[in-house]
Image 1 (cartoon, rainbow, N blue to C red):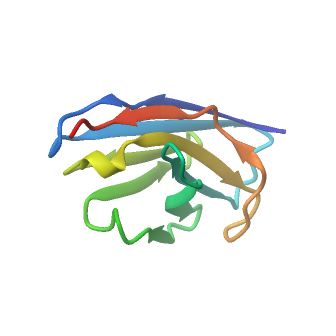
Image 2: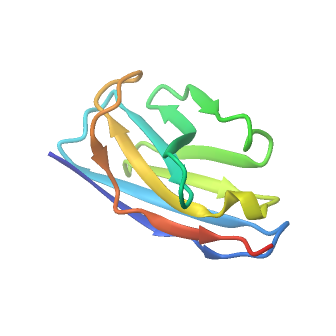
Length: 118
């Protein structure tokens, strides 16, 4: 089994920055997919960004150009650098694992709150 532990998040002013980290441990496959999702109150969970072990990156339109996803394969860690934060970025952010470069599993992190006051 794979476990995901997130860190980072918190409170940031509009226009500010935050950085999230997620460490994957356990039976992590060398070819995998890691990504970030978010869920705002009353809304469905949505993809923010994802990155494969090969380095293929995808972003959701609302964050493209502001957020950067990266990873350290030696540490099975994925990062989300969030710049130019907006109040609409307020949500619980979740890390997710996939057992292949284009596959998702149902393995999620515990979530970390990001709050950007209006």
